[in-house]
Amino acid sequence: MRVCLAIGLFCSAIGFAHAQTSQSAYTKTGGSDCKVRPVRQDGIDLGATIICKGFAGIAVTQFEDDSRVAVSYGRKPSDEPAAGVFFGPLNTIGDMLEWRYVQDGKARKPYATILRWRLSPVDQNDQIKKLDILVVTRLAPGPVCHVAYVDAEANKDANDLARREADEKAKSFRCGTDKPALIGNPGRAAAYVDR
Image 1: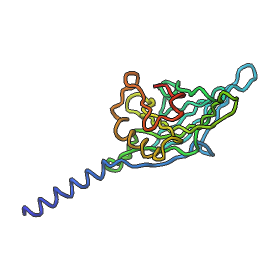
Image 2: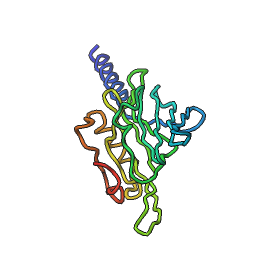
Image 3: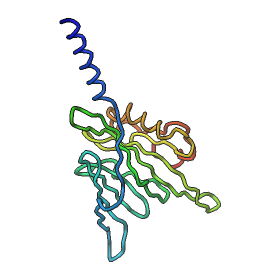
Image 4: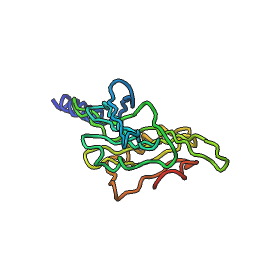
C-alpha cells in the first residue's frame, strides 16, 4: 500500500514537472495565413499592417512604417507597448517566430516570443553593414513588451541566451517599469537598442 502510494506520488510529481517544462514552437511571419492591410495617405503607400496566425490562437501583428517594423501580439496589438518600438535603422524581421510555452494539461500556454530583426545601419562611410538582433517579447496576461535583446552577430549562443532570458524573466517582467536588457556580448547592437 505504501509502495503504491509512493509510486503514485512520484509519477504525479514527474507529470507536473513535465507539464511545466518550457518548450518551443515555431510559426512563420509571412505567407498565405497572413492578411496585409496597406496604409495609405493621399494615395501614397506609407507602410502596412500585416496580421498572421500565431501559436495557440495568438495573432501576430506587424506594423510596417517607413521601412521599419514593430511587432505586437494579441487581440488589441496596437494598444500594447511593443507596437510602438521601432529600431532606428531600416529593418525587416526574420521569417520564423519562436514561441516559448509550457504545457498545462491539454493547454499550451505561451509566455514569450523570440524574433530576429535584421537591421541595415549605415556606417560613417555610407556603407550598409547588416546586423541581426534577437528580441525577446513578453506575452499576455498583462502587457506585451520587449524584455531583452541579443546581438546575434556577437554571440555564438544567441538563441540559447534569448531562450534563457525568456524563460527566466518574461513572466515576471513589468512593462513600463523594468528596462529591457541587452544580454551577452553587447556587440554593435548596443548602439541601436533602447534600454
